[in-house]
Image (cartoon, rainbow, N blue to C red):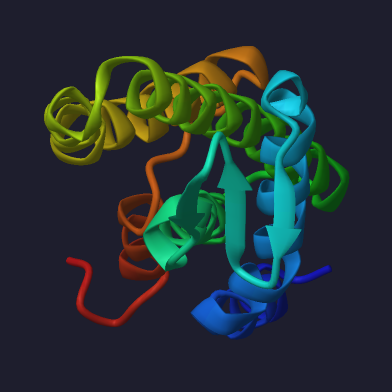
Length: 169
């Protein structure tokens, strides 16, 4: 496929709305958390998980929909990745994000049920502000090393287009 068509398709696919990621990953996250917390005999009620007499409500941030979306964008906006590798990278990266998110939810619920909401709030802020962003970056670095990707998202496309443009001297 010609580069220009590939770029157009990648750009179009980059505009998948956040709601699509929420639609896919919300039930996976809630029921994955349910399984991880099976010891506490949880009950799922819509977007709520009831465990140990406490209600934990899943919002978009709990699902990490933005993390999946960022991974998708990084993959779609990177030049010179085959379609098969894009699919594998997204599935593998999403699995890593998913497993870390389930572990994060398990830890938070465990802390809340066993040590109270004060410590829960402190750990939740730590996960929210620091760990989540760093983890997505580490997943991306792992994936580009694992799949031997040399292109830089957005920049490599701009450089390629610039070299073919009339602006190049």
